[in-house]
Image (cartoon, rainbow, N blue to C red; front, side, top):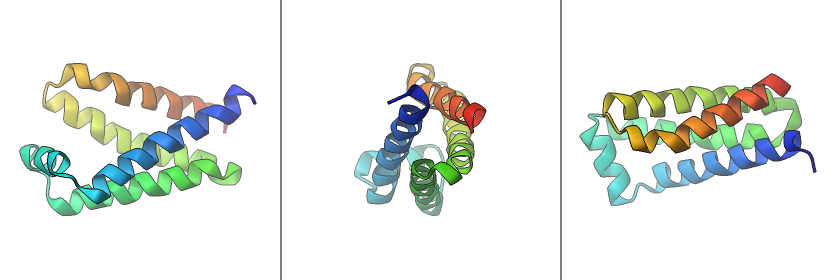
Length: 107
């Protein structure tokens, strides 16, 4: 299996995990959205966007759209963490941004 085939699977898995967390909304996720001043509806919208991105990434014909949607969601994550000055928490989202960009480059 090539890297071009593996990268979308890795990003899809990460987006699916994020979707599950945002939609299940355990206490720590709700607390973060509250602390950031975001309404509960945004958490749900982000979770649905993450789920859609994960699905789109799994289908070769829609992989580029999935990577673009993931990139849009991740831009919000990076922006929020930067605004919150949570510099050490930026590592994971930045790696996912790079994966999305690599996928878009190959799409």
